[in-house]
Image (cartoon, rainbow, N blue to C red):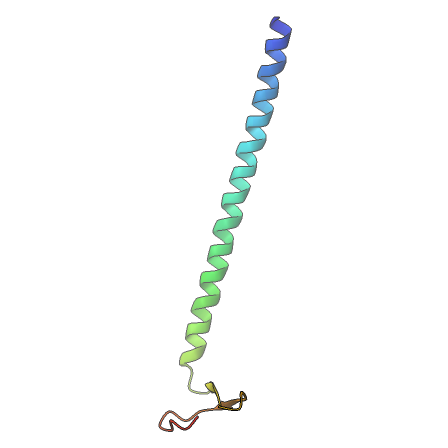
Length: 74
């Protein structure tokens, strides 16, 4: 009976170690993806503020054209 308990204990320790390792990997990757997404968002917001960026607006015919800030026809 003690051999069976020892096997179960070893099996539980191995499964626990695998679970905790996989959980740590998942949390690390999730944090890294959030950091990359935030950096991309910050870069996009910075790029929109640049004066040489043209904002395209969709016209009535479905084609994207540069729109004037003072012109509401587009």
